[in-house]
Length: 162
Image (spheres, rainbow, N blue to C red):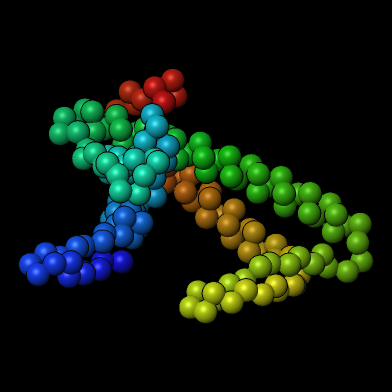
């Protein structure tokens, strides 16, 4: 929210919305990963991991350093996505085991909220295995993207560097 207020005769006060700024930063640079206590983005930009107002750091000008950061981004992202894939696969397997012992479809409830009115309500329905499988497929495609981008790097990044 940007707000201008007239304080005295010739002065104005501006209130910057740093959460909105960080949202715009993410729109521009993509989803970050945690790296050496900072947020690292796919293009080498870094941002404070603790404060919406930053600071932020531009990518290094040295091509080798930038390539190392980019490979680090994709390597860390791949680890995060693979972890989520494992948890999702495990959850789907356990739910299918429970379902196999039941005669009716398993039900679950979800808390929903209207973005405009902020009104909340619960919705209940059958578990959507197709939706879970779509998420698993998306994660698998993300791992493939990570592999492709890691392959384009110079391979100098190792997990110990995190």
